[in-house]
Length: 69
Image (cartoon, rainbow, N blue to C red; front, side):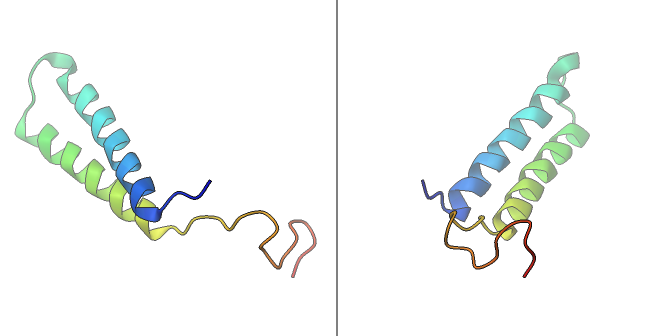
């Protein structure tokens, strides 16, 4: 199954944002600092995940794992 880099980044951003938001509301108050942290978590996950390329499908790689170049 082929997943685009954009779709992968969106899912990572949603997961990071949901995690940060769930942690932030544990005390019942969502402060400005917690909002900034949540936004930075989403943007960081989007950027980093989008920048990392997907691994090529098995068999299409010219290098066999464990055998060097």
